[in-house]
Structures are given as structure tokens and as C-alpha cells.
Image 1 (spheres, rainbow, N blue to C red):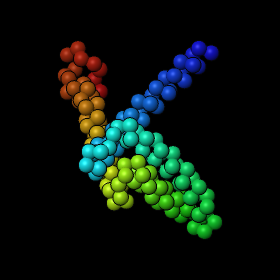
Image 2: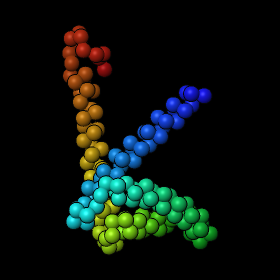
Image 3: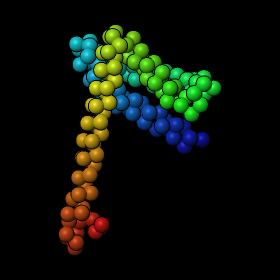
Length: 142
């Protein structure tokens, strides 16, 4: 029983940490488009609310559009859900539609740069191990 509670606590902590990490690009993008008015708590609220609204609208949209568009309903549902996400950004950051779109695009660009940097840093040990001559005492030959 205790192990289950510990596992649940670890999962909740991991979700909170991931939520904070994903909110950072939204925060930086919102800072750029709001003239510095954005706060980290606002970005975290926009990230959480945006994810919930996007998921709900995409799901409902796909169901409602199925009768009319068939297989294309998921694409149309995703487009409507993206507009709903922009509405969340527009409301939380008190910006216009174009600025909300800018926040979304810039957040994706910032997150992509962060992920590339993390990937490059994570690859360093692999490159070091591959460059190590056999018999030098470092790791296992690949």
C-alpha cells in the first residue's frame, strides 16, 4: 500500500515538474509579445488550461465533424482546437489573436531549441565513449 502512495507521489511530482518545464517557453514567448507583462504563473495557467481546452475541443470536434467530413474530422477538430488554444492565450495574456498566434509559434520554436540543446548535451557521453580507444579503461566498446 505504501509503495502505491510513493509511486503516486512520484508521478504527481514528475507531472508538476514537466508542467513547469513546458510552461517556460510559453512564459518567454508571452514576455516577448506582451511587452514584459506576462508572469510565470500566468504562463503555467495558460499551459494547463490550453492543454485541457485543446484536448476537449479536439475530441468533441472530431466526434461532431465525423458525420460530415468522415476521416477528415480529426484534422478539422484539431484546427478548431488550435483556435481554442489561441483563445486561451488571448484571454490569459490579454493580447490580440495575432499576438496569441505569435506566442504559440514562438513557444514552439523556443521549445525546439531547448530540446535540441538537451539532445546535444545528452549525446556528449556517447560521443566520449565512442572516441575512447579500446583498452583505455573507459566504458565498453560500442
